[in-house]
Length: 152
Image 1 (spheres, rainbow, N blue to C red):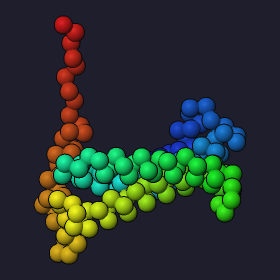
Image 2 (cartoon, one colour):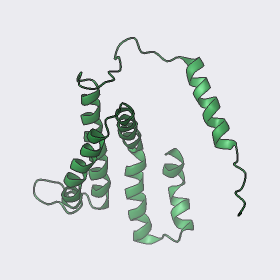
Image 3 (tube, rainbow, N blue to C red):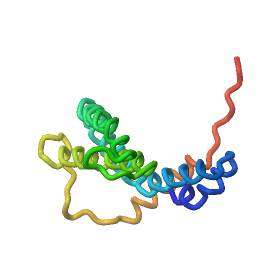
């Protein structure tokens, strides 16, 4: 996220972007990457719910969100009806709105009592040994290389 926000101009220029195209790409990607945590939260909540065996709810939230997103994006881009005209940023705002509302829906389900899993909201504290172990395993996976697959 930080790399894309800071390195976006360089990356898009390296891919041939210039002028208004570069400006549009930067506008859109700056909004998207600034709100990337919403994408992470949505997908994490959906994965937790799927892990309990409920595949239907995350799929339904995604489908309903897409049905809302399709008209909302052009409405925000072009300023239709009560929506402000945001230009290319409107597409990103629409997408991030989908992830924010979807995250709220998934979190509401988790803490509603209807879910098999109900994470506690109190008594949760940061535990460095657990966090360090997660980072250690993740770092090893990140830097380890799989051997090439040889054709048979």
